[in-house]
Image (tube, rainbow over all chains, first blue to last red; front, side):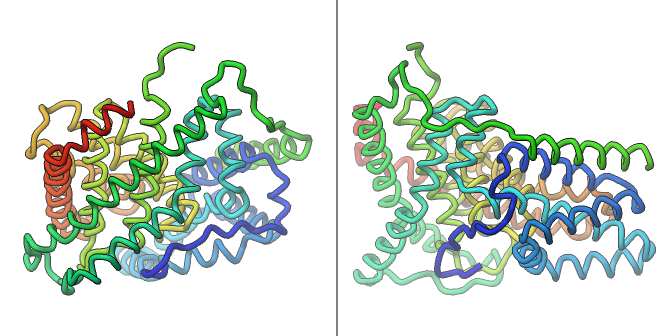
Length: 241
Length: 179
């Protein structure tokens, strides 16, 4: 993660999962996460199927990138488990962790926030909440620019950023004051932004009782097939444990 | 149309604050190389939003929104589930303390502490769930728990300072006119 900028969400456009209903992908991710509680043989079976799905869906690369970010943690945990318990236990824990870490990639690498908002509405989320989530996502870029603008304005006025600290007892009150000076204008800008959006939404009849969604998600045969396959695999794995 | 718990403006305010939390965690980092240091800005923002929208569930709402956003932009090295749950837990922790204790600087500091520890607690619970031996967790998570405590307290107190400054500046009167 670059420290100096926001990572843009990368949706894998070529993946066949783009055509799948987001609710199906949520169910897949939940099922994969739940499988992390299985013993090693069943877990290996689920993990093999999951890797197969990642490859077929063309999301193996983002999943690998996600796992690579936690490589140090994985390595230390594997070595500790191996040295103090056993190799089989180390493999079990690492596999569980890898599955848990990468399960949500099925959703976040193949779904746009707008699709997730629609799925939320279909799952019973009030439209106002779903709209607020979409607004939050749309505000990321703006808020990032505002933060940077405030930082640059403060630097122009001679307010320097805090020096590097390696121990918590080196923290000074001045460090908190610097952060407070940064947070205050950001809050005022955020409030003005929220007010502008709520006014615009009200002007367009957002709170009208006659309001209807412009697009409604429906589960298709391929969604039902994927859900059935997942239930079958998970059910078998839990029965075989 | 029936009266809703959060007004549209309040919901949008929570949403924009969720974006602010994620941007703050990514773009605005204190130059401190310690676990839990992101809690300073994060907890401050959660405490501030709970002060601006004084309703139970406000900070939790920001927690869920920011967790989803963070999972989308790929924040965190332990995957989307860990990110979503830890952001949500931080919001719920702040909400819980703000709802239980009378408002004040001490409550804000404790709310920040509980929020930051809740974030760490979720990680520990997930690690316990997948079967990591408790001994490893006790050894590996004691120091992070200490730093999360310090940064959580600092973040909560910072939130209290900012809320007091906003109140002095008349910001709450401006906000009341918009509800």
